[in-house]
Image 1 (cartoon, helix red, strand yellow):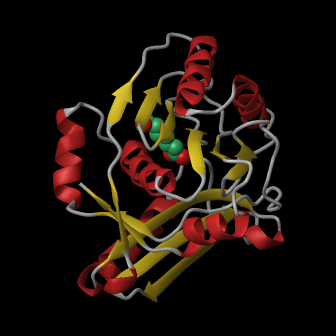
Image 2: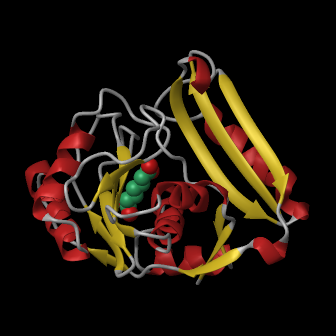
Length: 248
Ligand code: PML
């Protein structure tokens, strides 16, 4: 199997201040590496956030025995008609998942205050809402994951009337994250200016929330709320390095 990863930026490399445009993650058999790379390139060149001028694609062999299997999270939908209602629903879902009310509020304010989207996620204490990682504007990028039986997964999403690339990728990522050590919950909304639905996920499920931001906003991000006693380097290693296949 091969881990195939893409990250694209505008205005130079991410490391040199380029603005993050898009990213993608797959773990695929050798026969479809070439096709996967072509799809990622196409996506990097056609993202609504801008015109990428730096694209990094990494292809790396992964031993099948090193791949951890985790369950696909069940999906729930809540209703919200405005951004105010959407953010209230996000707060409720975070509290239901085990984040304190203060931590949930703090997390939402942290995402709302971003000056621009981050490539990766922030780690916040599920008790205080204080930031626990030291990755600054870069954040922690969740890497090396994919779904088993992609076709079946896509038709399941289509049957539920929720199939699009945002849900497909976010659900795989959230399933990996929720199975991580010391993770309490995740909060995310997209940086795609045309996509305003966000979600709260935990080991109990993935709750989709409409109107987490205004249409036209290209600022989004991810927060992982963690147990304050978490071993941060163990967690970072799981999120970035551990190859994971989400079982359907
Ligand atoms: C992203 O694209 O970066 C986040 C996607 C959020 C998807 C929410 C949903 O529709 O389930």
